[in-house]
Image 1 (cartoon, rainbow, N blue to C red):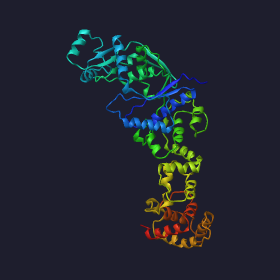
Image 2 (image 1 turned 30 degrees about the horizontal axis):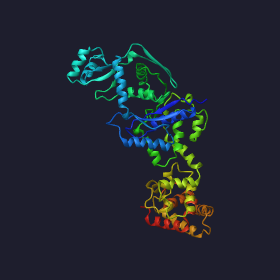
Image 3 (image 1 turned 135 degrees about the horizontal axis):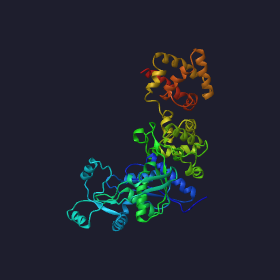
Amino acid sequence: MTNPSIKVRFAPSPTGELHIGGARTALFNWLFAKKQGGKFFLRIEDTDPERSQEKYTDQILESLTWLGLHWDQPVVYQSQRLDVYKERVKALTESGQVYRCFCSKADLLTARDAGHYQYPGTCRNLTEDEIKLRLNQGIGFTMRLRMLEGKTTYKDLIYGDICVDHKELDDFIIVRSDGSPTYNFVVVIDDHDQDITHVIRGEDHVSNTPKQILIYKALGFTEPIFAHLPMILGHDKKRLSKRHGAPGVQNFRDDGYFPESLLSYLALLGWNPGTEKEVFSLDELVENFDLSQVQKKGAVWDEKKLHWISGQYVMNASTEFLLESVRSIHPDWGKGSAISFLISIIELLKVRAKSFTEFINQSEYFFHDPESYDKAGLKKWWKDESANERVSAFLPYCEKITNWRKEDLEIAFKSFAESNECGLGKIIMPIRMAVCGTPNGPSIFEILELLGRDKTIHRIETALDKLPG
């Protein structure tokens, strides 16, 4: 059943490019909204002028657009709403729910050294005269929310009932000494003003939620429904970060991944569709997504799994689409070669490549003679003159092949191996090193057929002169 009144948002801070965790949060919000026929909004939390940068805002917008996660209204920028926040602070101050705190950092450290790990309420009950005196002295101040006795309870759609005793909270700051509002304060006002019905975000925000609910109540607002997503973990089961080698979304775009492949993988990080299906189109994700199927347990980032899913998209794509996509990244790829030759290369590599960039990297030897040879490959397959002797003995077999086709090439290789009583790999791998410069790649018979007799023999003769190096 759809619910068009549902409104969700994704609210990143432009202090860095869009990372994997942020993209997963955006995706789950977007899927939830689209499944319900609701709205998905984008808000940029740029109230920290020192860390927020326009280039990161641009990167976030570009990454979301590339992923296909389009938002429903113009982007909201917190930095353009400072007057709104000031009005709300004024209202809370007048009602006595917020007060000025003149304690310096040194005062707070002294209190902590004395055993007060929470703010001890030093300025909570200052008289008007005491406040005026400090203001006249030019003493800086923060604004704190006056904590009431009791408990805050809410039902999380993923983690169930959560209850926090107010004794665990102190009179927390909502406006810093420089006049800038804090995250917990502005996010409440923004969510209220945008009529957000569901706040779907990372588990790391669980500790913020009780504070935000208290602000909702102080302002007389109705709080939204909360859902906290499990963390994405590295291989060491700690929160995924750059130290785990997890790239930002923009890297996947620049490396030529299908956006659908990244979305499919991100969806499976914490969401269980209840089937074995792992490759989805965006429409299929919308159709199948159910927030109740999101798990509590953290999901481990598995790059191999992502590569497998990405490879599935590559294999299922049309050759023409792949060719067009590769050339959109590298316009000069295969320049001067016949289209039929390029299509053959794409067909040959599509079962191995996981991204458009890999087509470019893995196809280099189809267009250029090897400038160098893989050292590990040489150490294993061309370590001494015995390889030169085998390869030299094989050249006559090449010259005798009447039809330079993969079937006839395979026959020639097998005939040589049998006549010389050596394993097939003893001749295939040195030839692969000579022709491609690497021990990896598709069938050597198909590679040689595409390259042709003259180019193959030329590269073999060149390698015989250069190797072993």
